[in-house]
Length: 185
Figure 1 (cartoon, rainbow, N blue to C red):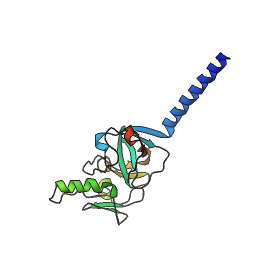
Figure 2 (tube, rainbow, N blue to C red):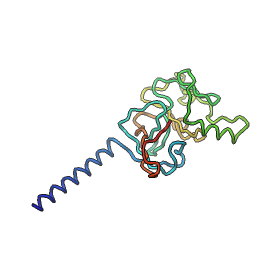
Figure 3 (cartoon, rainbow, N blue to C red):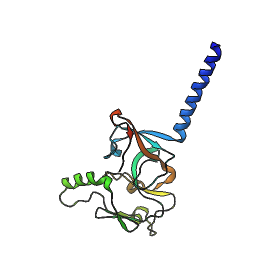
Figure 4 (cartoon, rainbow, N blue to C red):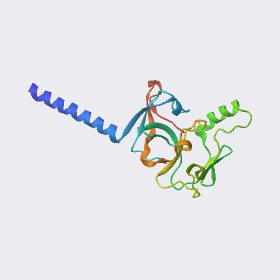
């Protein structure tokens, strides 16, 4: 009787471990936020979870990789979109697009530099991709940091391929005082 119960518990523990490994491989990716990835919604050293099964959309905070290094950024444009950033205004498909998630950072930046410096330097898809098409190609995304003075995003790495997007950040594990869903807009 005792031997049978022991075997049952061992099988149960092995099944749970395999289940957790499967979830980690196919459903979520934990990430500790680095200093350059921090913004108004996630802070340095926060432990967040990126869900691999969530479909990406405009303004989503995503975890992506470039040359094996993980980064956090926000999806600004998707395949087929045209983008121009001029005079601190985002033009998405030839229409002005509000970015409420960067307003606090932008305001603080403008208070520091009263000479009219721009929070986001001007660019367009043509200048990023060195093409004349002006549209984001299939399976590519424009991802920018909320802190636009940190240009280690699509402005430096180029457009991010869909296969390099690990998942959408939507849950915070630590610190425990902030445990729960990440409100990123």
